[in-house]
Image (cartoon, rainbow, N blue to C red; front, side, top):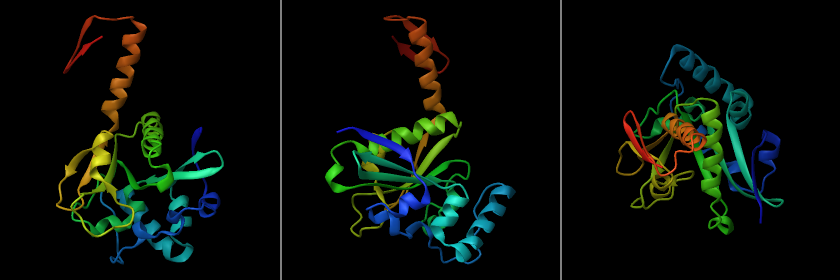
Length: 217
């Protein structure tokens, strides 16, 4: 069955038959004076966003301040979603020991795939679609909080680090339970561009040296 992936709006998201549409895990924060780290502009935006949440609601503000959600569909059925945006859009991250994430990275709050679709590589396809978007926007990295398999309690929105490592992430800030994982987009963009150059030059079965790297065609 064909799978299509696209960004969706707030109304469509709320109408989805998926538990994440009613989850407020990342929007909960005990710090009433919450401010994000980073530049002065980032701090100001985080203050405005956090205050607006109490007047207009979590999800409406998340979208208004630039938060995005990609959804994967198999036919007319929802298979999974990925929620992402600037780190300050997820104030709940402050409750983790690895705080703060990189304010210039794109933070992934959730990757969720319905159980009946978990052998169809939906999670990988959602990540790949996001990576392609970030390369075009010249975002330097993706970050996400992963969950170790040794953790007994089930935390909403946590993604196993094994899945993340298989998809190119590495541990940026270690923690016995919830490490901060990172995927460097800029280096990926370099690799993609280099591969295109190699193809166009028809450098097949030739040894090509690039500063800091070695490629065998």
